Image (cartoon, rainbow, N blue to C red; front, side):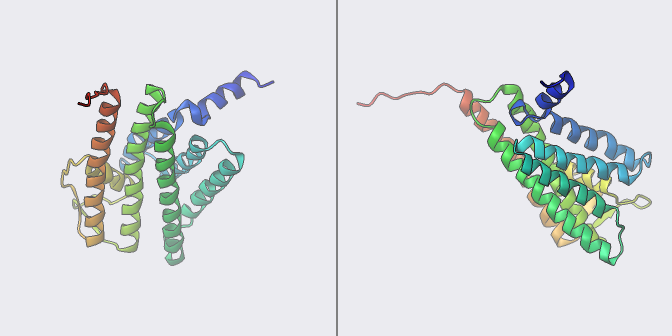
Length: 228
């Protein structure tokens, strides 16, 4: 018989309970840890640990199979290890591979969460939490892509003089672009960075339009026209 802690943990992580753990981790990482990193209150290691936790959490959100969860946990831990190897020549290659893997995993999480939680028949609270989680995941995916571009092509982004372009600042730029705010304090200068920014802005608008139109269409009564 399960003890109360194990039962509560199962309910919190079970895929059919809604992506509440994912939403909490994403919000805490993006809106608490990232600003603290920009203010140099915490070390970059803390943000990398949080990102690895998001990868691990995603495994529990999208699948109940132990093998899938174990594999994703292993990849998350391996990703964290790779990020600690530094930015040497070999390190750049490893970080690039790690970024490709993490972006692929996050993209899979987005697709599977949309399939499992945004369909008809799900509780409204599950659908809302999933919709917000997917939106935050999109911003996180693009922030990793921006980091990869800046790593491989230094100077792809221009920032105000005296400020440092970090993972936290690129995450900020990603969500500003996703929401199409466009403050102009960080500017993509390389063609690849520009194309990614345009694609993210389009993706953010399309996501909201498709999501809202789908919810409105589902809630609208069906009208029938009598045939002559």
